[in-house]
View 1 (cartoon, one colour):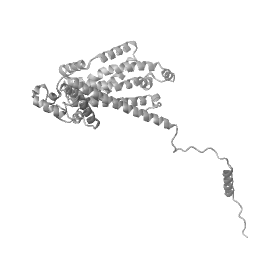
View 2 (spheres, helix red, strand yellow; view 1 turned 90 degrees about the vertical axis):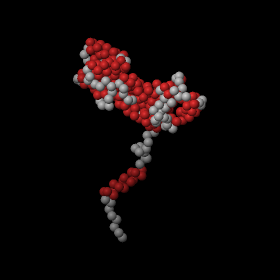
View 3 (cartoon, one colour; view 1 turned 30 degrees about the vertical axis):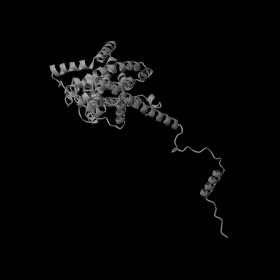
Amino acid sequence: MAATRPPTPRTEAKEAGATAAATATPGPAAPDSAAPDPARRPRVRRLARRVATRLAGALFVLWAVVTLTFLGMHLVPGDPAEAVLGGAGSHAGEAQLAEVREQYGFDRPLLAQYADELGHLVRGDLGTSWTLRTDVTGVLGEALGSTLVLAVCSLAVAWVIAVAVALWSTRGGRISTALGTALEITAAAVPHFWLGSVLVLVLGVQLQWLPPLSTPGIEGLIMPVLTLALPLAGFLGQVMREAFLDALDAPFSLSARARGESETGLRLIHALRHAALPAISLSGWAFGSLISGAVVVETVFSRTGLGRTLLSAVLASDTPLVIGVVLVVAAVYLAVTALTEIADRIADPRLRQAVTPW
C-alpha cells in the first residue's frame, strides 16, 4: 500500500483558492476596453448628421451660384453667337451666326441650355472658353495659384498689422488708443483701386522702389499684397482691439495679475488668444473679400489671376469661363470657411467640447 503524500503549502493555497472561487458570489463583469462606448454612439450620429447637412448646404450654394451666374449672363444684352465669333468687331455674317447658334445650341430653349450646363458641371466638365478656345479647367489652373498666393499673403500681412496695432494701441493709454482707432477706421475705409493707384504713383513711379506693374518675383507681389492687406487690417484691428480690451478686464486677467504674471506675458499668452477668436471667425469672410478684391488689384497691377480672368470673361460674354471662375471662387470660399471653423475650435477649448463635425 502506497503512502499518502503530505500536502505542501503551495497545494494548500491552490486548493483554498479553488474552493473560494467555487463558493464566491458572482459579481459584475469588468468592462471590456475593446468594446465600443455606448455613450459615443449618439455623438457619432450627431456628427455624421451635421457633416451631411454641411455638405448638402455646400452643394446648394454651388448650385445657386451656377444658376444665378447662368441667368445673369443670359440677361446681359448681346448675342452669344457673336461672342463665340470674337465679339462685335468680328463683323460676322448672318449665316455664320446661324451656324454657331446651331452648333452651340443657342437656338434651343433656355431651360434646355441650363439643363445641359448643369449636366456638364455634374460630370466635372467646365467646357471650353469661347474667347480663348481652350479648356476652362486649364485656364483656371493657371490663374488659381496666382490668386491664392496673393490672397494668403494679404491675409497673413493683415493679421500681422492688426495684431501689432492692437498690442500697441491698448498699452499706451487714451492717446494711443484713439490714434489706433483712427488708423483702423481710415484703413478700413480706403478703397482698393485708390490705394493701389497711390502705391503705384509713390512707390513705383516717384521713388522707384518697386516695379509699378506686377512681376513674377517677390518685389512684384509687395504692392498688390499691401493694397489688399491694409483695408482688411483695419477691419480685423477694430474687432481684435475691442476683444483685447475686454480680455484684459476679464476675471482671468485679474487672477493672472494676482499670481504675479507680467503685463507682457498676460497680453501675449492669455489676452491675445481671446482677442484673436472673433478675428479668426472673421477671416473666412475676409478671405472671400480678398478674392473679390483681387479683381481690382490684378487689373491695376496687370497681374495674372482669377480676378483679371473673370473681368476679361465678363467683358467678352464668355459664359463658360465666367461660370468656371465663379464656381471655383465659391468652392474656395466654402473650403476656407470650413478651415476657419477648425481654427476656431483649436483656439477655443469650449468649442472643442461642443458637438461638431470636426
